[in-house]
Length: 309
Image (cartoon, rainbow, N blue to C red; front, side, top):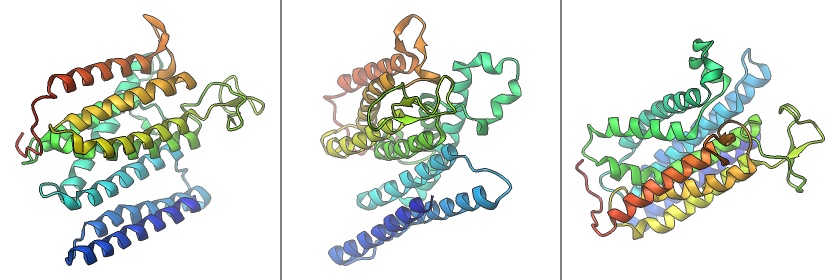
C-alpha cells in the first residue's frame, strides 16, 4: 500500500511539472494541471488512510472498493488534465458528471449482478443492498454510468455524446485500476495454469496452494491500458460526436471476449443457449455488433464538437 502512495505522489509531482512546462510554453498560468493533481493527492491520502484502518482501525477496507475509488479519482485526474485544450469542458463540469457516473455505475452494476444471480438473492432480498459483500457487474456499471451521465448532461449545454467521447479514455483508465482491485481481492480469477506467472488462490473453491491460475484480472487491466492508448491514437480521426465512445465499446468488447477464455466465476459461467460462450462473451458480441452498426451507419456524416443536445 505504501508503494501505491509513493506512485501517486510521483504522479502528482509529474502533473505539476507538466503545468510548469505549459506555463513556459504559453506564457500563461493555466490551473488545470494543478486541478488534475488534486485527485492524485486524494489517492495518496486514501491509500494512507486505507493502510491505517486495515492495520489499526476497527473496520477493514476491502481491496476492490479501494481500487474502485482510486480508479475513479485517477480517471478524473486524467480527464481534468486532458481538458486543458478544450473550450467547452472544464474541471467543474468533469467533477460533477463524474459523481453522477459513479452513483449510476454502482447502482447499475449491483442491479445487473443481482439479475444474473437472482437465485442467491431471492430468499434474502435484504442482501441486495449489501454491496460491500461483493457482487458487481461491469456491463451493468457501464449502463448505469451512461444513464447517470445522460441524466446530468441533459441539463448542460455540452452534448451528452460529446462528453461520452471525452471521457472514454478515462473509462479505460478507471477500469484498469479497478481490475487490480479484483486481483488483490482474489475475485474474477482465472482458470488453472502452469505458466510461470500463474498464481495460487487457496481460498477459491476447488483450489489450493498447489493450484495456480491465470491472473485474468491483470490481463483485463493490461487490455484496458492498451485500449486507452488506442483511443488516444484514433480520436483525432473520428469526426462525429459519439464515435469515440462507440470505438471504446468495440475495443472493450474484443478485449473482454479474449480475457473470458482465461477467466472463471460470475459472468464467466456458460451462456445457456450457447454453452461454448460465457455470459460476458455473449454480451460482448452483442455490444460490439450494435456499436459497430451505429458507427458504420453514421460514419459519413461528420459533426464534431457539437455543444447542444
